[in-house]
Length: 199
Image (cartoon, rainbow, N blue to C red; front, side):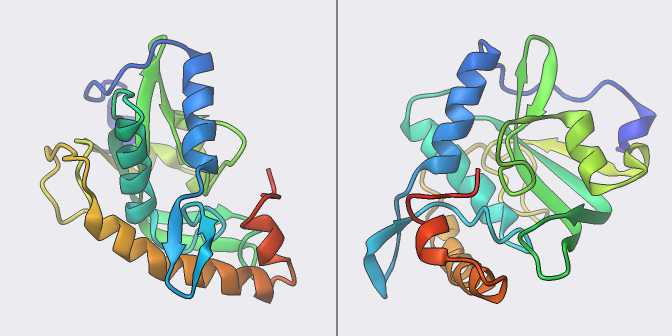
């Protein structure tokens, strides 16, 4: 459905407070647990600093970790359209997508999107998240799906089974791209992907 056609979207997972949401957002953003075979001693976060691609894997792994930590698992929001995001994590200063996906929750009647690839400091209100990707967010197509929907080709009602093995494998490719991107940008991947992330 077009976002501007209706202010009524399907219900999503409800979290109890903004403080709890911010704490969980920081945990899913900062958790270092992924291992590349060539650097098993250097644990990595999801590829938040490579926004070009891999949103489906980042969203799935965020939900997997939140479930493992015994939190209510968020739904996912898919957005479709001519999407463009300004970012310091791209050589051109912008990335473009035909779709994007991230976890979504509700707190105090407001929907928030958990997407450190677009905003690493905090969750964004749904309207603000869409506005980061388009100057006409009312024209974007959105779909609120189950926690386990992986790509736009999957069943939108799929619930996460907590495994997401495919996502962990897919993410390894993007971790390598992320490292190389920081080198392209003349930044220090050892530092930023280690103990000194840029947030």
